[in-house]
Length: 173
Ligand code: NI
Image 1 (cartoon, helix red, strand yellow):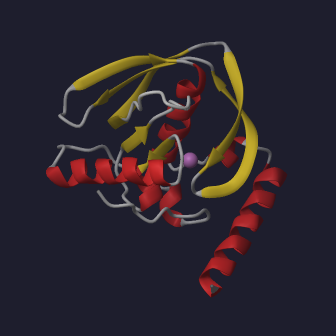
Image 2 (cartoon, protein in one colour):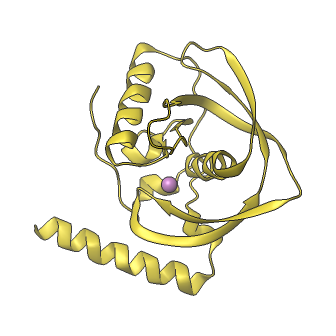
Image 3 (cartoon, protein in one colour):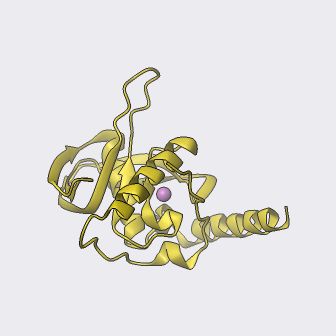
């Protein structure tokens, strides 16, 4: 498995609506494994394919955070939200494409999601807590949307300027 380079906002590839996967090829399975490796390495709890420059509907997640608990890597091709609760939750969200920036985002507290796993088998799950927030954040990514797009314009612009500065500094280094 390979740790891939994570794109930093702003990048046009992070603003694209990604097309669905027609067939889960060995290349796409490798991409999913690389994305999990990249996510654990970061470390993060979720990653979407466009964040590594691949414009396909694929996300990976593992929201197990307890020290010593068994990991639960999930690979979701073509994930679809089929139900959202009326109850909402507010989490202080961050993103591997927007390093060290956090802001509160309100989202449905529970969601039902269906997807295809790495073997192409249909899966469905009812997510709550951090998992629900994470899966919505990652599905936003494959629709070209970032968590800062949920914020007020001023706050979003402030974070975007910080990221532009960070990218300039990294380019010079
Ligand atoms: Ni993100």
